[in-house]
Length: 304
Image (cartoon, one colour):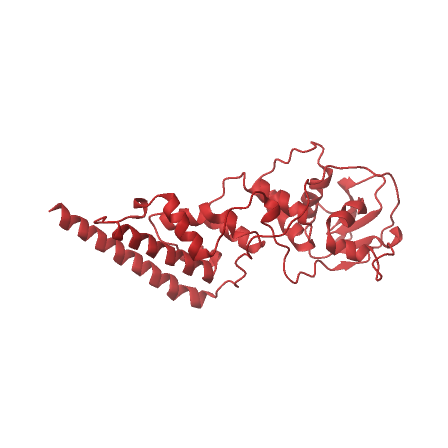
């Protein structure tokens, strides 16, 4: 709970990240952080540009490493710092909500190795297909990792709902609908009298989806699957009224491995408006119902 004086929120030192020897101070909401600029300079091209000065080779004085993040939540920033100050060394076990907070800031500030760490950890978590697709698209993570999620959507019995369509965006909805149509068609061409989505093996559906979504082979590691955001200007950094002190060079456990960009651009199509998506989802659902009724009738005919 924020401390207040005369109804005005008072800035207090963060309980975990006001560190001895920190040379960079950051005010987020009502918390004052004192941390090590080394990690921000090393990991982030955005902060490196800020710290290197106008000529790129003259480091900014530690007296100027004072920032206020007006559009960041203190809880999210603390979760982000945990990556560098994790006391459990290389163990990074956290729930989905924590990784989404970290991923959002890593993607925004061009912390490429931190973004790789987020992808590796997200790949370990059970995430529903629609939610995972939306997350990876929103944060410019390669669609190569989404092949199992696309397969699950194309082979499930029910069509996409309107809410799911809004999460996925127009482009993905159209591609998924195309894939579902082709799965049915391929099953029919194989001589199946009343085809269903389970009549094709995942490998066959995988090849079909790779073609529709323009996917290549799955990357060997997240380092080949993450893409820095296009045109990201990062946060608004304003001078903070707090002082800083230089100190020791504490070495936290940062994310391993060099950054290598690659893969495909994620779905950057803007989310469609409600007025546009309503008739489209209604049309797709109507086609699904017609297909299902047709297949039931055909199945009844062949049983007789």
